[in-house]
Image 1 (cartoon, rainbow, N blue to C red):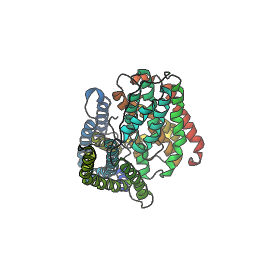
Image 2 (image 1 turned 90 degrees about the vertical axis):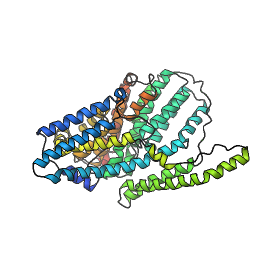
Image 3 (image 1 turned 180 degrees about the horizontal axis):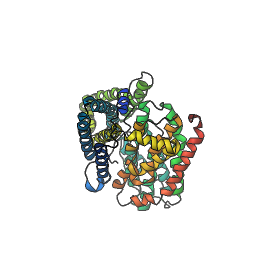
Length: 473
């Protein structure tokens, strides 16, 4: 699921229930429709909608459209059936809880996306690409540097955006070497997904588990070493297949625009505000993000007000108007990934409807009750390689299984990195198949699935060893 520069932390897992008191109450409202025809219809409609999401690359039908339609149809059918029973308010109370949950997620991600768009517009990422091009490094050095940068950037700007930026860098410096591009893209996908898995801001899974209050902010960083193992093991194995030598490369004198560094600083401050609002004031994190977004808009107003003066200075110095770009913060809001934001709405509402029917409670009993939390959570990661982590984590959070902190860290981690097993299992992988078309493919990724699986197993073992203190059961 996924392609374009911006989705904070991304790609994103979108838990629905139990993030707010209202949402928690909604998740507890069930209509007992698991054996009713409308329950079967809800499952069928959701499966059909998600099948259309899978073939987005071929149909060019935006992924938000089928799930939004499915959400409307499913809830309309549920309202009719429950209304005929005489409980007209049950559906409305459940639905309003999910709307409240989505509003939190929407405002948080919209703020983050706007910041990432602003950094892109100010040439922050182009400047990074230019810096690497000027280094004229060999293939092996580029492999490790792009992977390491993907791992480091992903916790801050989300795994999808990170993968797109680093793939652009890789394509620019690779000098058309298809073998290097293919392996380098796999490395970036694995590194970006692993990097996002240990940060509350790196992936939608971690973001919403943190917003729910299940795992404290600082505790997520206990996954840092397992995340390093998850990337490092396949990266080491793939490095032996790298071509020798160095690309010819080219020059790139891209520089950051005026105001880029203050915007970077404001983004860091905004993240701190979100943590402060949630951890100290017990307010939802989105309120801190929105407050930080207002700071970006005030600074954008300053850049606009001073642009004319800078143009005059450039004219006096060079004899020409120069190239001083004003900054429009509202334009960056407009550039947000609206397809992704609306897709989250559709998934939250659809999975919420299945929970309302009673299917998630039934699944929780069968899944976590019979398999046990460890096996179930490992399996969640494997399934997310095919079905994507978004509906998987939505379902897990709505099931709300009784687990200790270690198990919640485990399922958050596996849902985030499990998508690396296949190219279609993460937003980063799907996006890079389009960006490096013909060089990074489903089958080129599948060739190294064994190495990625070894990293997956080793990282889970590492988590259960070094984080044993979080397992109380």
